[in-house]
Length: 52
Image 1 (cartoon, one colour):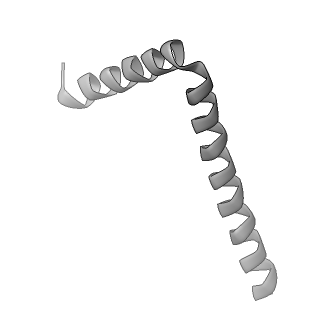
Image 2 (tube, one colour):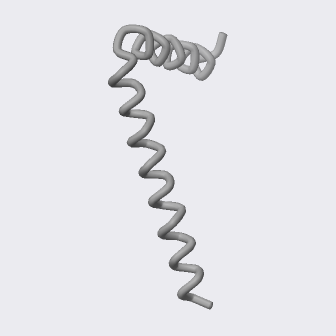
């Protein structure tokens, strides 16, 4: 097995552990990530709208 695959499996295992042991914190973290991505997409849209 290569290092990239091992690290990927460890990250997935850590994520599942986090979801199972602290579901409220995991959901809040995911909501924050989603909000950040949404805000970034809106900012890019505004930038290109103002550019034209």
